Length: 377
Image (cartoon, rainbow, N blue to C red; front, top):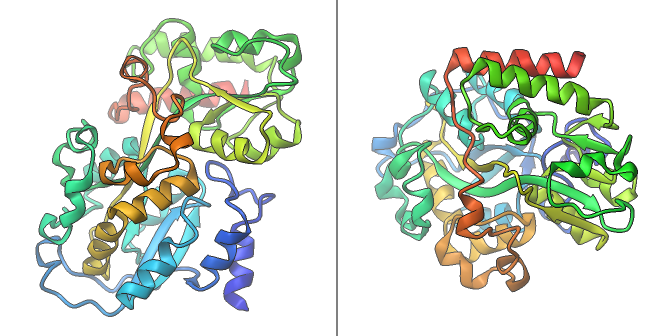
């Protein structure tokens, strides 16, 4: 019962922890009730990647993932075939996760940072390289995610799921066509719209609207984008990454959103639409990585290989409604999802949806200062 109470707290849609990933439904609740959930034990050191195939870990795995970002059968299935007990805990922002991993005391074996945070982890020496011999299912990855700029060759990471940032909206209430950021000017959107509460994602609206690269390093362009957003803020209802419930309840009529969240909202309400803005947006990928001092690194490799299996990968994509990086899983993914052009954009659209780049400490500080200006101004 204690585990079930803990799970209920993690999956409460009214909780402030629920921001980027939202409710998958009662099936996931009861499936996860079979797993041990709670804070991971203190770090006790772990096997290096080079020894992942040769060291026998105790049958435990400590997994730290975004809130509500997993299929109902992922963890129970892994536990059944491996005999490994999974301790599963959740975070709601990259910053929250980074602070815990950087402390060196978290004891997690697997975490799921976004691609732009991967470079920060590597600069800080927080990760260990992967033992590819222990992950034969790496061969199932699409080439785009093998050659990706954030980690060429998957030395330190394996993609979990990917998506885009765009505009989610109420078809019946928005009162106009949603094709780009001009939708924020629609009368029905005024006071009933939102942008994401993440610095790089929120700032991208201003940069793209002004014709700038969302990965610009130009201080003047960053400042111009902040000023644009300050003007836009007068029309907004809120700045928040929690969009599912506001969209499905009709509280919000237009929201900058992560594509997977928009598609989950669409599963609840057919009134929810999603558009990739004509100006462009950002692609992102969330990644499985192993902290440097993971106590059960061998088991982490076993889980990575398991989730890269075709059936497991397809079930994950079907549940979370995000794009799958797993080419072998494609034939098993729901056809309506696989054939949806806003889930899997065309090559032409992908050219306008770059990954968020790590721009270095000095430039990231400019973005942070600009975002603070937007939120407090």
